[in-house]
Length: 184
Image (cartoon, rainbow, N blue to C red; front, side, top):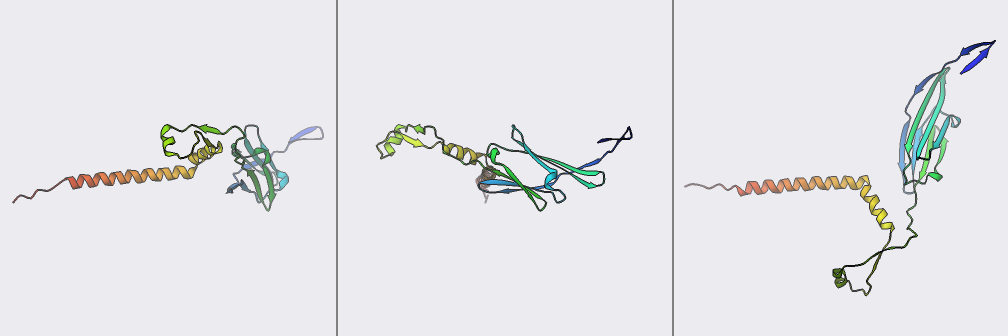
């Protein structure tokens, strides 16, 4: 920051301290909330922006002592699961709460997918119809389940159990196939 005094120019420099604020997520059914703990800040010292590429940028600058300032920058990728046009924030009691509403899973207005059953299905099905309607939203839900962390963790655990069970089975067969013959 420059200021002119009596025709001469003097510089006032600030020292900046970068810090990473404590952030927590609260996951709920219809929305997620990002809580950023900023006890020494005021609402006017904070700025929140969202870019066209879906990056939520939260910045803040606070004067702590004289010429010393603390500054932070937090960037969060807003995925397509969220309704970016309805994101809102509230600052109170030293906490910035940013609510990211999730997009509602709506069935597609396009024509439903038609699946023609195989001849085996016709034999097993007592209905007189040749076509079966599948709702398009089910494909989206199945994809979300397959990409979820919980599903991945379950599949890793199942894989581990299968490997252990196979190892025990193989060891059992090996040890029981070895027969001692007593010589009299």
